[in-house]
Image 1: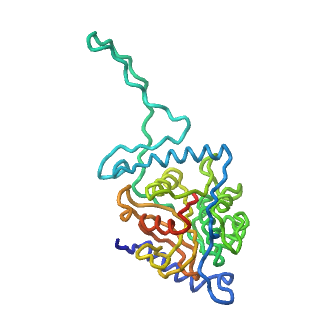
Image 2: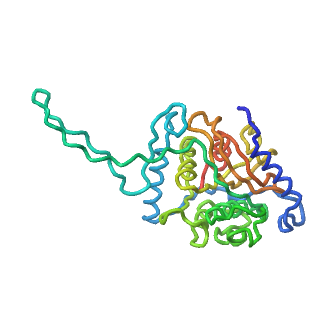
Amino acid sequence: MQRHAKRSAVIGLVVAVTAAVLLPAFAIGAGPVRFADGEPDNDSELSVLTPAEAAFVQKKLAMAAQVPTGGSGLAGSSAGGVPTIACEFDPCEPAPPPPTRAPAATPVPTAVPSPTAAPPPPALPTAKTLATRARQQNNYYFCGPASGQVVINWSRGIINGNNDGEDATTNWRRQSKVAEWMGTTSAGTGGASLASGLNNPNAVLRPTSDWIYIYADNGTTQALYQKIVADVAMYAMPLVLATAPHISGAGVYYLESWPKVAAGAHHWIVLRGYDGAWGDPNAISIKYQDSSAGYGGATGAFDDSLAVIWQVSKWNQGGHVVW
């Protein structure tokens, strides 16, 4: 697979260089700089849900499962298939049954007009990117709060300002407050705790009354793609992905924002968009934002193939996402 540098990546690198030069004092500190390492080891305990939360998750999983993955169905697909996604309201109106006809040996009575079917849901776009704004993590283990801050700011309509996570004028809440909500320690932020922090009543402004974030397995490459499309295209909400950003021997499977090896690092990034209908994972671009300038990576906007995104997460304790 060949990696392709894109304009968003160039912009991200420029932001990263600027951030590295102008990092806030709290991000510099004394002593050697450590790699960003913001998730505990063995972070495999998934979100524990109430019955109401579990019902919402099942509804969202059903929606994600309807994201077309047969090479057709997305708006603009060359295959020209009909998109099929689950409706966003319960209960979904069923399709009308076919008219009942008498046996062929007898005259066919006049058919009773069938009920009018509900109009099909709108087609999903082949590409969508949310205009989130990256934030610099305060220290080497704050990538979880920094990622969560991006999600919270987006939901609250804050997409401007600098990348300083402690600037109260350009953030819904300071990054340090988000870290409190997430129970972040020097060992990092666990996935279930990250989701819980986002679900704090003062954190994310929910797109629907029953919305929650959960920490879950990625599943297959296709399943992760479906989760990304479901959140970004159906709810206009970002995801937060756990990654091993650049392991030794990674070949081409490392984050563009992490050009150097960082053995053992566990790192959170924000997934904010995708470009491409389901097909070759190497040909589908996933848009993300990083927070790690000064800690082995960069801060800004980047994109990598779905194949890379899935693999760097798979190498990180099996592959998990907050979605």
